[in-house]
Length: 80
Image (cartoon, rainbow, N blue to C red; front, side):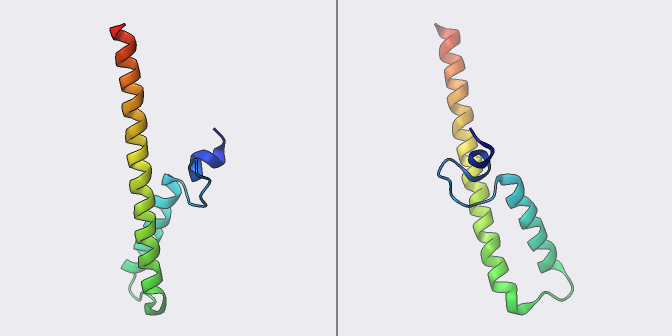
């Protein structure tokens, strides 16, 4: 698997990897918690944060599925 696939998913979608998405979420949170958040960009930043959260959820779900497959394969190997 290439670095691009591991960061952007096998679909090749142009989205950040989990760590990059979390870092961007943290940056958005800091902006929103600042003393004077820019009201003109507030809605777009919140929308971006929602998209990043969905990316992270999808990555966590996919990782869980992969782990379950590996564990199942290991269990079937030890039972044979």
